Amino acid sequence: MESGRNDLIIDTPVSGEEETGHVTRFKMSDFMILDRVSVGLAGRADEVISEAIVKDSASPLYNSRVVLRRLTSARAQRRGRRAIEVLKKLVGRRILYHSYSMQVYGYVSSHKGGSHSSFTLVHGYHGSFSLRHWLRQPDWLPTLEATLALDEESVRRVGDDSVGGPAVSRQLRLTRILLRDLLIGVNYLHCHGIAHTELRLENVHISPVDRHIKVGILGNAADFYEDGPNRSASDSNMDRRQMMIAFDMRCVGFMMAKMVLRELMDPVTFTKFKTFLMKGNDPSCLREFLLPILTRNSATGNIGLQILDRNWGAGWNLLSLLLAVKRSKRISCIDALRHPFLCGPRWRVVPSMDIIRWGLGSTAVRITEEYIYRTAQRDRLAHFIELMEMLNPHSRPKNWLELLPGKWRLLYSTGRHIGLTLRQPPLRVLIGDAYLTIARPSKSNARLSVTSEIGFTSMMGHDWPHNKRGIKGKLQVNSSSSLKAGKRLYLNDMAMEGFSLGQSNSEKSIIEKLSSRKWRKLIPFTELPSSLPVAKLLLDNIEVSMALDETLKQGVDVAINIVQEIRTQIPPEMFELTNIVCGTYVDSRMLVLRGVNGSALIFTRSCVNEEL
Image 1 (cartoon, rainbow, N blue to C red):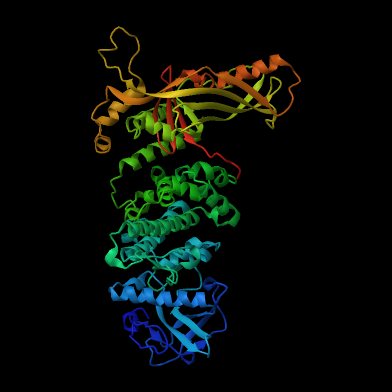
Image 2 (cartoon, rainbow, N blue to C red):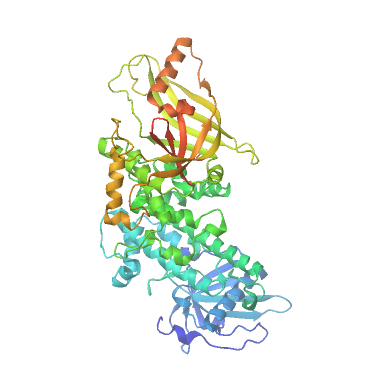
């Protein structure tokens, strides 16, 4: 069947039909209709699907299984003719696209009198399941591995020569194979002026014969250039081209998300996922948004979360580039194929500076989630924060005015940590999440409103209750701020003469790392700089308020003790906002602020609407 595909492209004149060369016109008598239809071939409401065996002994397809897709409405018939037209264009340009598309063999057409006609598309059969049905099988991983026959060819395509291993490694390897095959197929279309426009798991099949992904029959494929390729340089055509490529890449992003994160196969969860993006939220914050869903049943055992977190969070980076809000920011097929997430360990990929920044931030987030702050971890976190500050992509105050507004969740402070183990406070207070909300009331004004919000649970008495239940509340601190350009100075040995303060461990670690061979290639600094540009925050006086979910019957003294205990446990900069001196790093996902005592606070952008 595979060896004879090139012989199937026959130029047959069609009477009464539009010219549709390069395909065969069949008769219904050429087929033996089977009495069942595979579940993966489900069509639209205006399509009738049948499986058949070609019984015409003169046909190269003799005794082969094909799919008959009878198109009942005028709109469906336009889709069928469009699929043939696209095939004709691709074949005319001598592109062997059949490796990545359902092979359209021909059609059956007949006029029944008047304006009524019947049009049936004849295309290839590539197994019983679409990719969506594959992923819903309980044993999908070993079955797909067997179907794809992970041989040397597959290893060469993904740069991964490992075999077996834990489920996370196996699923990552399979995801790379499927996504790379999908991107190669979509890139074939884009390189020849065609957008697919209907990339979904339901439309994608895996052929057990050549082990390639088939991206559908291209019934809704659209041309990049409305006026033909000769006028492709016009602005309108370039905008149309960019828009269509961006739409296809967004569809690939949705497919990748469902393939890796199985929770998104649930329609309700996927609707929330799409709503988050449609509201204009930055997809670089997807991990923060999805984390409560992914850790609902297991804090560490979610395979999809582990896959995307690997290699310094490269999977989340690729997903955010595929789903970027601005069309111009979405990654292309070629760049996606070169992304570290899709390149196995045998391929050495030189990461871009954006990937390095992303990796530093992702690793810092992962360390904070371990919540065991031993000396080695604290030093490592301080080291990563220093590196992020040196690679800050936005040093001007106008950039900060654009990126600062939003809700930021506090992850970690390099300052002193005061816990509960060795203390006997007057009452027990369990700190929840702490947020810093920054808003810009007017675009014409550079003033910012800053709100610190700390959630807590207060438990009366000197002993911890088993269920940790108590009175929930929020402590809120409000202030306003202006931004100003500034510099952060690094004091050298000569400047430190006469002082007892020595070089910090993190700075020593930075100098050692910068001198190493590995980091010299990545970071454009050969030594610790004398100063770095920062954004100075000039905060006004603060206003403090506290709200409790229940009426406090014990009196004002207890409320004072609650505030005092919160101040003891949280970083002082979250209460005394005037202690925040400057911002040293900001991007769409991460924020680093420095306090008056030199400690750093690292934040991640949170979702404004957190209802899941």
